[in-house]
Amino acid sequence: MDSSDYYIPAVATLIGLAVKLPGLVRDWRDPLVRSVCLVIALGGAGFFFAAPPTIAAVNEATGTANFSSPLVYGIISAFSAACLLLIVHWRGGPPEHVRSVSRRWQAGYALVVVMLVVLFALGDAPVDRHTDFDTYYATTPFIREMIVLYLVAHMTAALVTTVLCWRWALQVSGWLRAGLWILVLGWLLNLAFSGLKLAAVAARWAGQDWGALSTTLAPLLSALSAPCATVGFLMPLVGPWAVSNWRAAETHCKLRSLWRELGRVSPRTPLAGPIPWYSSPQVRLTQREAGIQDGLSLVAPWFDTGVRTRARAAAVAAGHTDEEAARIGRAAMVAAAVRAAGRGLPAASRVLPDHAEISAVRTEPVGVSVALRSSPIVAAARESGTAVLAEDGEKSPT
Image (cartoon, rainbow, N blue to C red; front, side, top):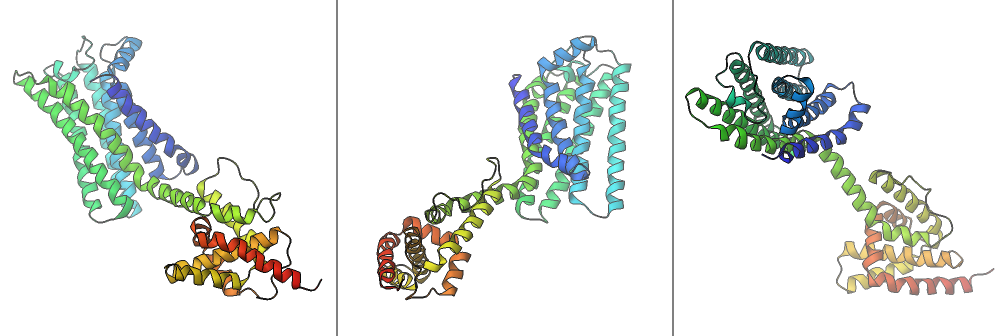
């Protein structure tokens, strides 16, 4: 594998960490949030320190041949433990049971990391190996045990996490279920990674050379598992947030026509106060909705149910459904009122506004906005409605 095959997954996981970092700062006391960030950080660190250029740099900086091996093995073992802890905290349950299981996994993998360091110190690995350390030292005393311990610990975590996620995915739905199935795929890839590595080591014991399994295929599977783990853990957390923002942005866009229409009443005075450019879609939608409600209050005295009735009848005659025709009628009434108010005409007096219709406009601004943008009946009523009001104004006593 090229160095980029290691660094690209590392960058991808760090981007995932950056997405979750604000949540860590805000909710750092939450063990679930800490576990997610720890998993992502350790996953990225594992790929970064496993890259051959990084291995060479670390070995040279420390002055110890193959120093990167126990370092990478330790990081990956810590990553395995963090994933198990995350699943335990994520699934929840009685607090005492969660704490007990978490402590057992922590103690077990802490012992694994310590044993990796001890076995490396007891062994002899004088020749730097950047890509094939596993198979090159597969028969070296103590180093052999270190390699097998690392692979068995990784396989155990992969198997347990796969089973837990699989069972849990069958019991839930929505974003959580989707995230769990992606995690199942990711950990199956991790399980295959460890299995291929162990097969290559066992082949070395038998005098065979299956090095390609360890140096080419296994790292490829590991690189594929990284985005699965990141996406799987983040999807249930980020998915609902992303959908909420998307829907808010979509509604904000649909309200643009009504916003602009009402803004013509007083061009020099905005319907709502300014907000920062970095505001979220929800904040932008709230600002637009509030401004529209204020704008409707400004033009309500000019609402003329005669304009609405004629536009609705025209819409029905044109083949629109009753619901669509009602929206077109309300949009025509708003457009005519905006034009009358903007021209300074007296408020409608001959035909009083229907309060139920005013309430309907306020509670369904999106439908009115869409009709304002797309209906030729509304465009026609905009001028004819203004003319009617103008005639009323001319006949009204001053």
